[in-house]
Amino acid sequence: MSVKKPAPKFLNLLVIKLPPSGIVSIAHRVSGVLMFVSIPVIAYLFALSLESQQGFQQVRAWLASPPALVLTVLLVWSFSHHLLAGIRHLLLDIDVGVERSQARASAWVVNLGALLLTAVYLFVGVL
Figure 1: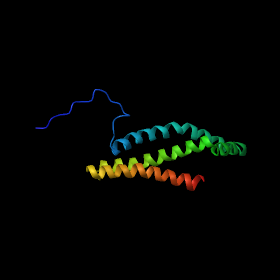
Figure 2: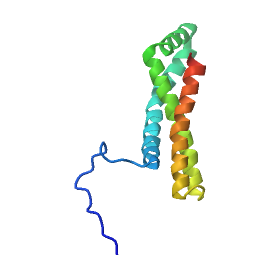
Figure 3: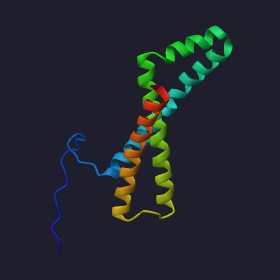
Figure 4: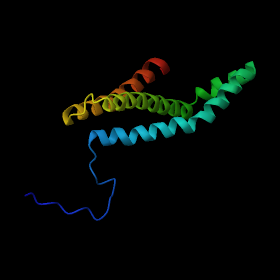
């Protein structure tokens, strides 16, 4: 018979060490929220860019600014992570990679893959 550990008295997310799959799960939710919140801004910028040549130039100038670059990189990470984590979740739903070691490996692939795709965008697409 094994001895049960006492339950924690409080949950401090800054102290708890999450497994890689927990990080993927939380980041998947955060990336989904970021993409959802960005929809009105992207729609506005798209509409402004189609209104006239001047509107297009305004959008182009704004997208070249440092704050917009940071937001764009954040959105690219968000899309990359959400896509890779979604594929991982679909594979888990059909029982592919459900063993602990495989799940950990796929979680690391998602986390590092999203960062890699974002770095590729930053260095190839922006610079």
